[in-house]
Image (cartoon, rainbow, N blue to C red; front, side, top):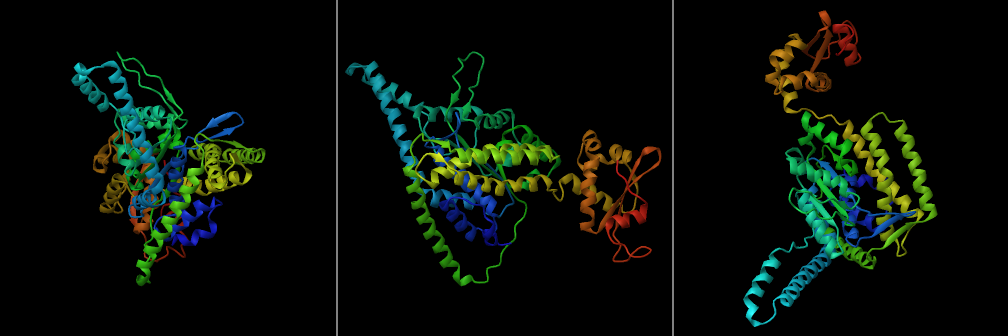
Length: 495
């Protein structure tokens, strides 16, 4: 479905955000509005936390940073959207940031020159002085706008740079997050653990034997935009690893967008394509100017306090989330619901900074933030319920049964004799067999087959695959697959 059809159901948000979102929806029709908006907010959060703005809920301060986790199939425009946001909408912001970074780097060089010159005065120390200056300059870690991967130690050093500079935030962008996550070594796992801790702007230093431990760094905001194709998480172990992190790690802090498939729209008016492209870039340039004008007026280290009405609205939303959580059996979904209050508070701060000059989060700011968070959070439930078509193991098992059509196999036979053909270890296959066949039972009818899963003698379980009848009812009309299975085998069961 062309995402322009969603315009009537978009949540409430500041006008500048709505304009950017609609503009990108008009061009990137293979992406969902949720995905575009999530990516846009991550960029807005990075820009505004660069100025170290904060919210204050009663007496508790915090940064309005944002973690975006995008699961979207290849071809829906993740990288294109990200690049166009950077190069068009946030063009002036990045020019401003690069100037600030250059000023910082030059200041560090001047400090080194001054310190070394005071230490080695006089012409006779000229060569030593120059050598020392060059040596110290090489040790400077430059201020860079974005980080594309790294280690926990590397991110700590990035935080140190921003702590010394007394401005800026960290923005981590990964286009192939799944490959990094799934192939993670020990240091990579430490990196993801750090992302969880750094959500609150804290960066613990690494304590190594023989080295003096540095002080932990606080007060530096961190934002993430992590993107990947969800197909890489369709294999059993990969999905389990991700779900575990959703329970305990950094991914719990992220706002997830999920696009499992795309529809390719046919352009029946090719003659207007060039005009549409020109109009897109023209409008994007205008929105770049409009955003930057708003950005420049935001005060450095501004603290946005909740009005009483905004505070009560947030507490009302908390009660709504608690009620949903009490009625939710899925533990992952329950945890996500409990995190949405803080997500809304952070977003309300960004919206307040965009909506007006005074440093107050008012009722409208909070209402817009809650509306947006509710709009975005629905994707997470869809992601949890999504069942992939196959992983390699499923494919092998299904093909094995196709090649042995109508033949009955005992569960013990499959786990002791054939498990290697399916690409599993015996232990893993025995542990996961029920879940594997739950998925295969759902998949089989889409391929023209159905599974019989029956109780055999001595509490054994029997599996067999059969062709679906070609519109030929058995002993009368067959209404659905369950009825078909019951007529063929009696009541089925799975163990």
